[in-house]
Length: 92
Image 1 (cartoon, rainbow, N blue to C red):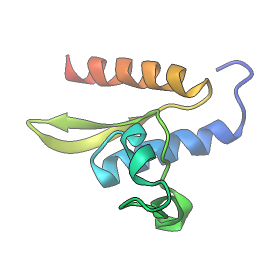
Image 2 (cartoon, one colour; image 1 turned 30 degrees about the horizontal axis):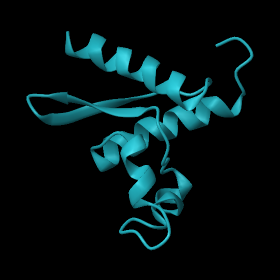
Image 3 (cartoon, rainbow, N blue to C red; image 1 turned 120 degrees about the horizontal axis):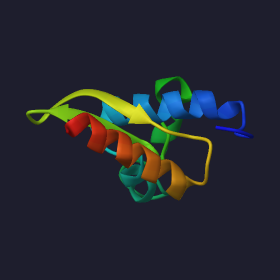
């Protein structure tokens, strides 16, 4: 994306990694990873690759996770919108 930060490349890859390895969208980690919650500190695991904000979604075939999409470069809500479009394209 024009004017996106170079760091967005790694962030997008890590969003996809997080979504596939944890079998859930990355935005669902936000609340559970806060202090005193069940997943507090998860962002510092897996060589610091776990992302706890939106833009990563697992891809499923017949209920099984077969991959993931990760998007970065815009605001979190924009990343989520683009990633959701990727999931929809994969599913159709």
